[in-house]
Image 1: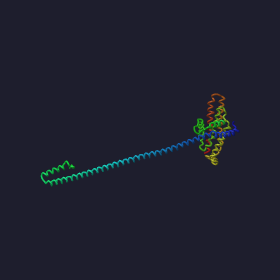
Image 2: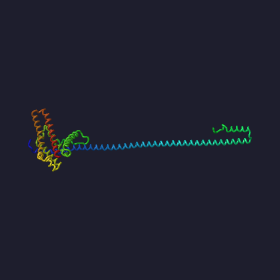
Image 3: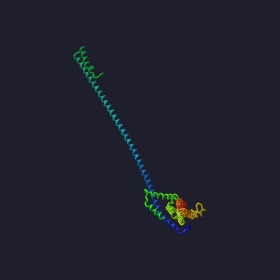
Image 4: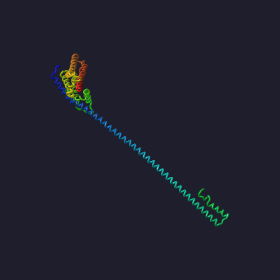
Length: 166
Length: 190
């Protein structure tokens, strides 16, 4: 039991054979599978990271788009408001102008009318005076006649026929 | 040996990368444990020797535990432990030689000081002898004591002793053997 012999050589050969067999059938496949799994996990993590990055990017993109859309809508609203204000102001101004014009025209017309009336009245008065003068010349001058003429004149050009208040 | 190979073939037959079964998980945990243990000692450059060390660990482990089933442990034969030790010796110096190249390998004997060169050369013989004798002595000692206990009290009493001498001592000697082998390899590779 203590002395060395051929058993030593057989042991070594056995060990080498066992080593080759176990390497082929046990250690190799198991470690290979573990290695593969490790690689797969790493790959998946990498994938996840890439996907997340992409998603992050997209999110940023969309957020930017949303913000710009908001801005745009605000801009549009602002523009519309400004437009409406301008339009209403213009309309107001136009209306005012028109009203002023109308008033002006009315005033002018009234003035004209008044002047015409005055003119008419003056002509009438002149006519009346001429009539009275003619009558007076026809009938001769007398106290009676003067009084009558005066009355007549008053009656024709008196308050009742006065066009002007003053 | 045939049992080990057969078992490996059966266990390894349908390994999957995804959704491993319980059997596969246990196997992977076991092999992964051994692998991590040796990798921790040897580092990256020693990866190629790991399958051999795992083989030796399984071989000695099974050889020591086989006493539980009533067989004589093969490791109580000096020839077997000497064979294992010689293989370790070859592996240790091969690893160093491969890692460092011829010149640095032979210069390595004069380190850390030239004066220790004889001791380093003696170590070539001392290491395998110590590995071989440690394993042999432990196993034959345990075997002899177990036989004696069985002769005196054949029932019940041998059980606790069997736990110590067959299981604990066997596994510890396995651990020591592969641990020292990988440690020496690491030392040589540096």
